[in-house]
Length: 406
Ligand code: AMP
Image (cartoon, protein in one colour):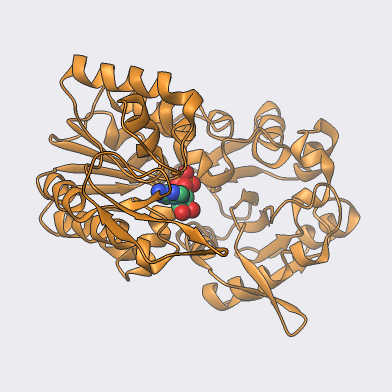
């Protein structure tokens, strides 16, 4: 059922607590932490602009990294407040606590349309244990809870679930932000009955991370293209040699079960038929070679799909009306092994320009698209990694379940 959103509720003068995903990559530069990629901050701007225009008093809660209940200075959200102020074009107050008197005083001072960012909720171990007293402090005097942190919605933490339950119990509203609404729309509703041909491209390191997604998508897809290291576990299940490639030998059974299900359901299930191979020498990768045989030589690793497989995959993508892509085709962090991933990225964008709906399931596929400068040229890029996968598996995400239905 569709979730209540911030478009459905009266916001003026209300104290609103918004859970956002500001878990941005940072690096130290001249003694200060600098944000390397502000995509996640920008992704919340539509929600924040609507809140500001409608005169809500806005408090933002978020986590950064894994400080495990300690005040780790490099994981402070302070730099995010400055960055956000620049993006939103108005001051953003920052409180170096997320609960307690200081946080309470800062929130009380807010006028309609003003913003406050609280310090990292994971400085308190009670966040991840979903401690009711901690959630109660976060919920103090809050009228409305909004969750716009899709990337954290698969965790039942105090700032995602505990606070929502407390506010709902006392009759307050709990709604999805605009980013959360879009994530649920594209990864959920749009894939319920996708236009055919529906082509799914999956890659990345492990079969075990994505087998449940594969299993669910086998119910809907016309074609599944498998690249990345996970292809080698499927190839091992089929009896091919995989050399030194990254594989999960104990997962060949589940791989075979997926192959059987594809045959039963008439889903075209394509594995790479050629590969780029390389080997580690003195701690560095040797230049890759094309391996046209189905078997990979014993002393080599498969590092990318080969040119023949790339062409075959791109042809399938070109004919798609709906595309879902999650995971790189090879070790794309090394330019020499990125050809397959980048070709898939371009093919997905070309198919989109020709009218296909393309949904990118977060993580490294988004990085790959951005690397080739094609980030904006797909229908939707998810901001969630683990959350996207769990949602695509069909699991109810606790942070979503805690929000009211329309
Ligand atoms: P995932 O998070 O499961 O999508 O995995 C992404 C990671 O898989 C990336 O860091 C890639 O470098 C890695 N990867 C993709 N293909 C291969 C491969 N053939 N061998 C080893 N690692 C790979």
